[in-house]
Amino acid sequence: MPRSPRALVMAVSITSIALLLGYAYFMTYPGHHTMWDLPRFHFYVISPTLLALAVSSIAVGWTGIRLRDTSAMMLALAIFSLNGFFLIHALSTPGFIIHDQYHLAGVASQVAMTTCAAWIFLSTLSSDHAIVRLISKRRRRIVVGWVALVVLMNIAALVNPDVSDFIPIDISPLNGVFAALTIFLYAWSARRYFQQFRVVRFPLHAAIVFGSSLLLLTEFIMVTTMMWTLAWWLYHVVLAVSALLLLYGIVAQYRSNLSIKHTFHQANPPHTLNRIRISISSSMQNLIVATETKDAYTAGHNYRVAMYGLQLARAMGLDAESLRALARGGLIHDVGKIQIPGEILNKPGKLDADERSAIEQHPVIGYEMCKYIGFMTEELSVIRHHHERWDGTGYPDKLKGTQISLLARILAIADVYDALTSRRAYREPWSQARALQTIVEGSGTHFDPDCVSAFVGLCDRGELTVPEARGDGAI
Image (cartoon, rainbow, N blue to C red; front, side, top):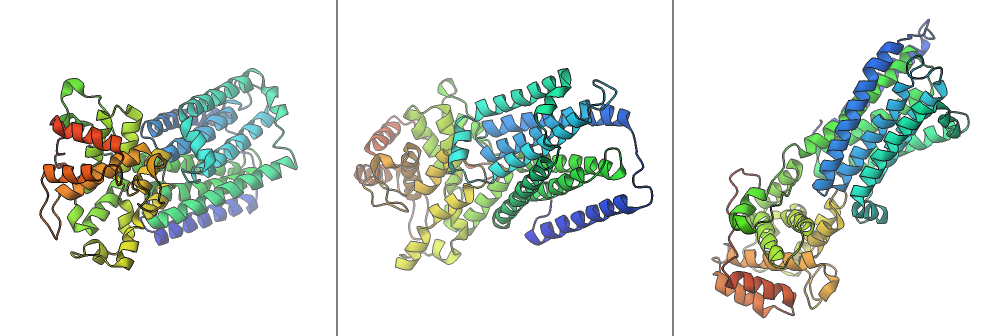
């Protein structure tokens, strides 16, 4: 995948121009109406290919659920929709399972393209959008329900091909309306993902820009060609490449994940451990590393804060899903510092008013970055509100008391504790006793008293352990 916005624009432009030139040639050369009637290839090759891609997308979607990544889940549903509904198109090849149902094939193709576009469009919405919050809350039911719906529609279409008569979207003017809507959704999605790619440079975003652009061209070619012509076969090739690009983008994004499971095991006795796996994409790890490289005196800070937060949350009896959210939010809670000038981050003395104001923007910056890359509202609350104070004097939103999410209140203690017990340019690290005394003094003003009480108990019992430095260099 291209690694810069300019390279991405060049790659998409060159590919699109080449495809359009090929399409123009196929549509204008002498004999372009010649039918390349290859039903056996269409049925025996394309059907298994689509089925394999659909099954792969289910696995990817379920991974998105486990990793608490809404974007990955919705993109996987987009791929599943594309291949699942196109499977009806392939299985309805005349002369095999059913006879002379060109209408069914046309309807299935358009449903596939439009539903795929709709899911990709939904994945562009921010995590704090009402629709995305609803999808996140019911994500397991939605995935299972959507997969079941597509499977049932495949079965219904093959058992009773005339069911497509109830969806006449391949007939004018509905075909034009759906084609225009689909092209608009792909264009909008490509634009939004490109905007994000300019900020985070994630391979997933590049793949979606590329894939959405190709799917836009696929829709155009599909609705302007006749079956079995060379141009018609061209859109099948572009479709397959587009689906593979989308799938590749998700896999490339998550092929290397940070697992806290092993280190958390070290920090807790095996017989009391509720094992938990927390994953952050390799791309996000790179952002965290870039942040910590820029802020020379907080190397490993994100990881240690996440681990301290996990220990406190576990002592307070939070469930596994909350632990995952806290750990993911903790690992990236300071990612907004990547846009803060290094001379401010590393200033050894006291910050002036303007510098303090700049520093206080990092939770908002991090929040704005992460709400478009799949993090759910629980993680976003940790990122945005870990500097809020119990008495309402914190930043950036001046929240007070239980207006601050419990996860953010927990991480606030972990964040301050690590800051006090870590070496800084202007002081040596504090002892645990001194740091703990400061946290106790902040009970009811800076910190949630219940969280402070639980943290003190954790320390008094000797159960708070210092996270070991990771040996894999991830964070």
